[in-house]
Length: 294
Image (cartoon, helix red, strand yellow):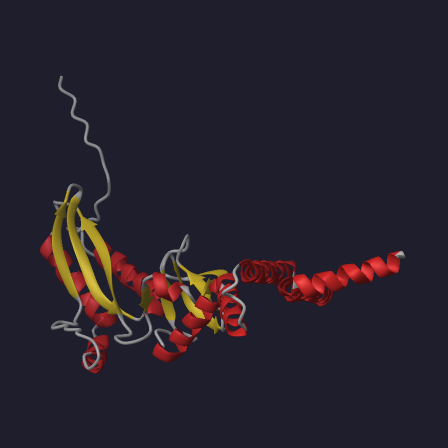
């Protein structure tokens, strides 16, 4: 018997005695070939190295999980039906692409419930910013805050997976009430005429923000149809408190989220101008008093 006949006999023996191994082996070879072809064209046409490595990682997970399922099918006699194989294959795909599937579910949730839209200012987890893009796997924020005061833009773009909406708290500045409460703390010395200072601050707050009260009241009535929001007083107010360094007067007022810094600047400029006109009102600051006994 020559070598060719021996090879033929070997393959005939394998086909007769171990047919259950043939399909998984051929499938693994075909999948491996397909995997290599996709990787080749991905590397050739995708110049972004991060995107390339992400696709390569996903494909490798998919290939490995499929091979493990095929081995499991061969190992157990009860897994011979195609429907069972298909179910296991689907489970393997779900495990390998878990993050992508959850992100798609998050995208569906965002489209359906609309907790935010492009253009809204939101805070989710430790990130805050204006939504500038929304896609099937992620949404994008133009960051605000962080090292920049007054909720102004940092210039950074943050890409957040859609799945984040399921496990992080989400705050929307732009929907519903559409205003935020802001406070400015002014501390004056104990020797100052705090009653006059309080009247001055109240007048400044009214000049800058009282016009928002009627609009805010209308918004509250609209939002109250869907949420239990109850505000009895929407006009600006000044509250009095006492601190170690002096008398603290807190201005509480309504503000549009995107105008917080400019509004604060305008109010502080008027405070400095009006306090400068009154000799009996002085801003407090940390000081030390040294007494020398002779």
